[in-house]
Length: 323
Image 1 (cartoon, one colour):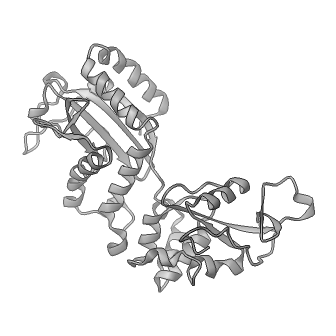
Image 2 (image 1 turned 30 degrees about the horizontal axis):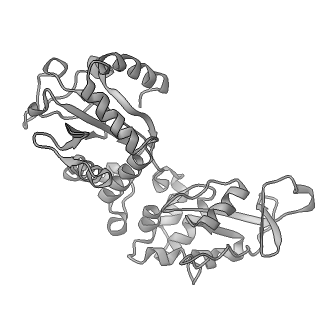
Image 3 (image 1 turned 60 degrees about the horizontal axis):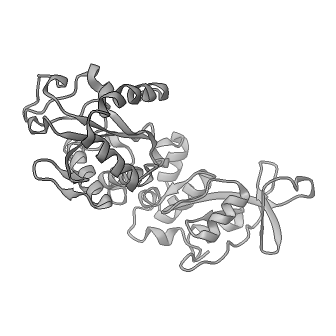
């Protein structure tokens, strides 16, 4: 991945050329109006990678385990899923019509290796890069001109952008954070312990035990459970919430009242489609300054290694939470 200061340098160089391209500015402004911080774009990329991995059926969590044909299909899925999320119009010559302007969409997991078709020359391209191993992504706009393309093409006559001309890309979102693929990034011993369990419920229990105070997406839970009713494996009715409660572990979901508990404990707050687990302990009298939450008639804090395991409190009940 390019260093952050280089990201800024890229946009400094690109801004001068973008200023003379009113269509690029119009598309940029429209994209930023739809998604100022890139949060929606980031979730599309996360969901697309997870869609390809199909962990519920395959148990896969690593991009490198995809088949060559699946990796090739990634660009088409990114294009389709972005259009669904942002409701881009169909283009006539290119993939999209954004702010009334024809825009092609190209995705690559390898930075700089976007495959540009000859018919894109003269048009704007939305260039997208994401790397699950780095949990990073970026997306920018570039007016395609013949002189900025390498002349050696692949069998489909598609061309790549010359390295010296990548500084002309205007990065709408120059350095986005991809929601973490926890199974990919957790220590190998912990991952083996999770995936080595004999049942979906045991794997989900082990996941929330070993991965605490980190956001865990539903797709990670789905991959661990490898069952269509994977959400049942989290809930309090014989799921992980009830199984882990005797060990002092609570599992917060994306419900407002659960999010408030996470805020008060000052642990990562689960966003839509995410969970966060943490072991808690009754607040000792000498730790009153530690972040705390009031549940079941007493104060609780994040447990430390010195705190013995004790049954956790119940989370505030919310509709469908089965807390």
